[in-house]
Structures are given as structure tokens and as C-alpha cells.
Image (cartoon, rainbow, N blue to C red; front, side, top):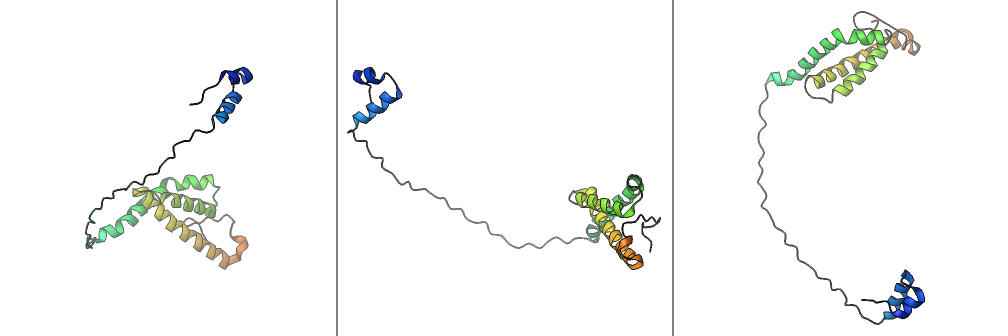
Amino acid sequence: MVKLTKALIKKYGVSKKAWVVARRQQGGKTRKARTTTKRKIKRQTMARRKTTKRASPKRDIFSYIKNPVVGSIGVVGYEAFLSPMLNNALGGNQMVQDVVELMAGAYLSKKQGIMGATGKALVTLNSYQLVSGLANNIKSGGIGNIFKSQTTPSTGYAF
């Protein structure tokens, strides 16, 4: 260990500079070189579990139609209660309402249960209404008439 000599204290005081000079003066001591040791890591092996292909359980017809039926029930409730309020808020523009309902359906389709099924049904229904409305507008009067407010009691588009 390095010690400050009286001469260094007299010259520099007890300071960083004094410690640096003292370490430099000590010089010739050899330090023991560190030896590196290699450790062997023991790895434990485990037997793999054998897997066999299993037959998937047979699904009945109700499991295939359950999601669309639940979604259509949710859409009927939506169309009865929330859709008129949305129509009033958007000023009766059916195309804008369909776009908003399509975005809401895309958001809800990521959910589980009746909300997810309703969202998937809303996406299907509103994408159909948008495409058929665009096709009829283009067929009847060109692209310029697409964004005009059109209201028909059944689907919102003139057929």
C-alpha cells in the first residue's frame, strides 16, 4: 500500500497530486498476475416427451354458426338503439355513417364474445353497404355523386 511521505506532504500537502506522485515513486513493486481459470459448466440433459398426432374433436353444426348468429343478434340491437343516434349526429349522411360503423366494427372484431362477433358482423355488413352504394352511384351518375347525402329507408342507398 502506498503511503504519503513527510517530504511529499511538505511539498504538496495532502492532495490528489501528492497521491499521484507517491504512486509514481513507488514504481518497482510487481503485481501478481491474475490467472484465468476455465470452469466447466455441467449441462443436464432431459429426455424429450414423445408427441403423437391426435385427432381433432368433431364439431357439430352449431359450433360453426354460433358466432355469426350471435353477431347478427348484436347488429340487430345496434341498428335498433345506437344507429339512429349516430345517424342524427352525422347529419344523415349514410356513407359517412357506414365508414364510422366499419371502423367501429374493425375495433370490436378484436374483442371476445358477443362484442367480437358483433364487430365481425358490422364489418361484413358495412363493407357490403359501402361497396354496393359506390357501385350504384358510379353506375347511375359517375364518381361526382358519391359523397352526396342519400337516404333510403332500407339500406341508405338508392338501388
